[in-house]
Length: 116
Image 1 (spheres, rainbow, N blue to C red):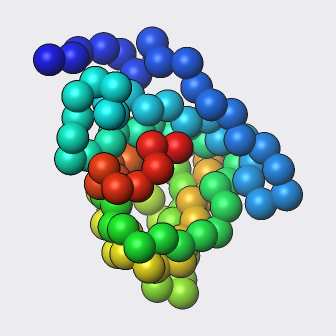
Image 2 (cartoon, rainbow, N blue to C red):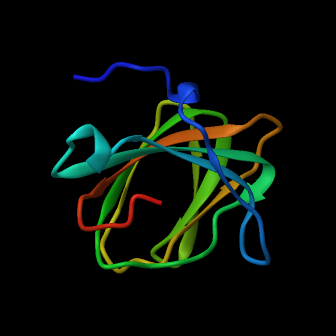
């Protein structure tokens, strides 16, 4: 069993041409004995975004705090704290923070996916 506050895990920061202001943490993964899923927590700074990308696995997201938009199925969809999202396998997607505070979300991926 593992119970922690997500902020206890050191983040990996992402910055570049396609990504801005993203800090990601693997809070439950293979090293914890999780054989089927990986739980990641992303913090996206105000005005930040993940890269637009697609992969052959689905993932589920829970928006913990903040406001933003998720691009999927060729359109932008607003999200805010308390919302959940399913990103289907092979769907091009991206997340943008459109608010003044950090956009914080938990993301579950299957064990075949890279943890980060």
